[in-house]
Length: 488
Image 1 (tube, helix red, strand yellow):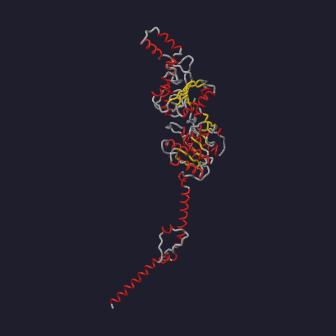
Image 2 (cartoon, one colour):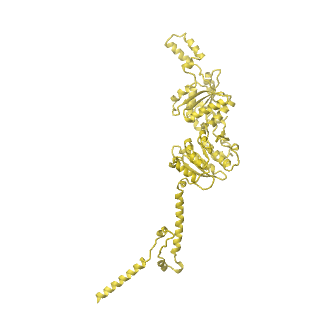
Image 3 (cartoon, helix red, strand yellow):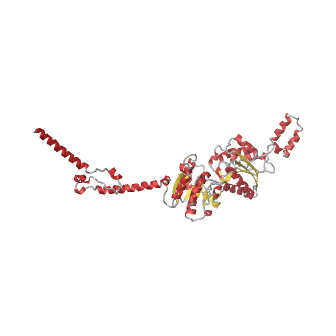
């Protein structure tokens, strides 16, 4: 009997346990994560009944409403992700939607990143001062995508900027021309290469080009100083040859003459390497001396000296006393300011009497080398010398050098917007500040608002005009005087 009762109890317990399992297994339990993943059009069973039983009637949780809410959130999120995937390339450049967008293409990494990031900061600083600032995005020329022409096409076709600022170098600017031309996007390059404008009619140069420097130098030397004969010492490079061609053309057209043109190796910086080409500016070799009357007099006098060693010694000693012969009144040096600090003293070492502000050099040293028909030689430089680094390890021979000012700002004028924005006591050069400041203002007032013409704009670099798509500056001339830049 007891055995039968035990069996009946076990069977009853088993039956109850099975019914409990069915009550839970009969309804599919869904987690919040599972609901989030489900498509909104799929019917989902929930354990609403169980929750409702445990809750007050006034506080019932409707999983149906929660399901709809989560699906709505899910759809918005998926739409966002889908949009990001479709515009993956554009997101890389953090493009904004407003119309007046600028894409600044600069070297933000790599060899020239210091210059690129400096210009980036200047752009942001100047843009913040505009009445209605541009929306500006930055693009690194050292990124992988820059030299993938197909990706650049996609970038400009799908979401073209209004203007492109940069790059710094000519080869990088060439890379942008074809993609930008698809949407007729104007490019405002900092590359000092006037030949770039031949390949795209909406490419503008905002830099100090060789032709702009040469125009300022030759106009001042010929019209103000009445100099007619020039020499040029240039680097044997693409840029140096461009300087030679343009300088010769401008001087000739202005009624002057280039009597000497000497090239130096762009990679040679030692004094011993520079000495040989510079020596070609003056007539000191034996072949040219044979035609000089003063040398012929030395030869006649040497006949009174014994032949052999003593006569040769006499001729060499007297030859060193001869005044240098050169046929120019000014020498143009389109070279870097670092190299100029080496070259100018070598010119003096070769007894070329330089026009200087140092009276002792003029009266005691140079004067004895000056022939009756010659004048002191004026050294002419380029605007990139307009930096205080030219005074580092300075030389007395730099005093009196003339070159176009890279910027024409009076830093004593405390109400000038440029001065208020950029003046720093420890700043050595303001070239990039001036270029960028003027470019942003020209884009805003001339191209965007169309309030004025380019000829009516006067900025940090002076007055402007448009010459073959170059922003031509009417630069002032400045002189170095006792380690100071003096407007001349």
